[in-house]
Length: 412
Ligand SMILES: *Cc1c(COP(=O)(O)O)cnc(C)c1O
Image 1 (cartoon, rainbow, N blue to C red):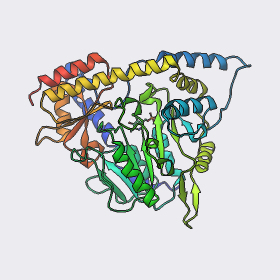
Image 2: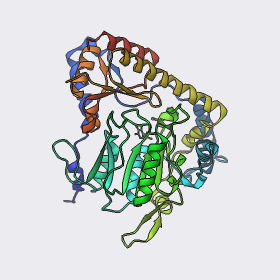
Image 3: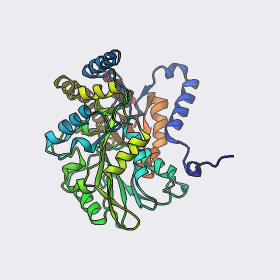
Image 4: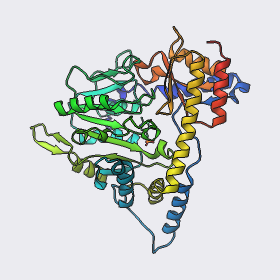
């Protein structure tokens, strides 16, 4: 028999969302009437229609494929030049951030990119990962054999966990030890926190001092409304020498089902060989993508490009305003109830403290059982998430208003 990758056996069997689904199913089977009333504010998936500009561009691209004179087969693995240029110009250079077209690598998702990026890093790097966290960063390192076993609390040996708490504003302090790879995600999933310029400057200074690399997930960049909140790690001087940035059209343009994202690898970013020689990472990622990936479909890249047209930008703004309006209502409702509320200002997630003595899974069960609202228990994102639950603002306005009403009807 063929040998398997035994690292997979170390994984805590996809605990969070399957467990949520199990509890929701069990509740629904036992309470048929209530089941019809369930409102899902759990998984972070968009709910509103795809922007018209994107749909029109996609349809026109499909018609091009239907005519042999404009037909296209395989495209460039890194993305079509029209999309790389539109991204670099609209998301970076127009904001005076120095990113070249060919530093943009278009892909079918940031989830895959944040996992695949490990292909270009060696073994033995010390990993720093925030707690709570988007589980992909942890699990992909487990699969790659970069960790030991998990302990009873679910923490893996070989990972430096950076606790994100109310006391530090859910932005981790600089670790005392030397680490090599640091995962940061701001605006944050799940806490809805943002990092200040000074906090990111401290991380960039640390990374440059130690030759570490920051893997910066900016999937929620479009939700930043405050001009003082950084949208990109490259707003920080020196970040081009120490950071890779991941961005996605999933939340930005409602593309979770369409699939388009990109990763920025600056040409000035260096790693080193075991022998100590400096090596640029840009050609390694280019080689990785051209070997293992064949590009994003042409209609999808045209749809992403259309988000940068004047009409597209206005439609994206409307979409973001819709979700942020939801976030404001949810925040207000929680605040009115006297709950400890975080996030939801420059991010579509509300991170709510459970009442004293109530665990995050108990809170999940109460919200499901009494309000018929599905939230995400904070503990599912890591040990430091215990005592919190996450409400997603991705929903219709009517559903959000109903969630607020039902929450207010609960006894706290
Ligand atoms: C939604 C999300 C993404 C986007 O993933 P895609 O694969 O591009 O849909 C990336 N990072 C975080 C933290 C997210 O929540």
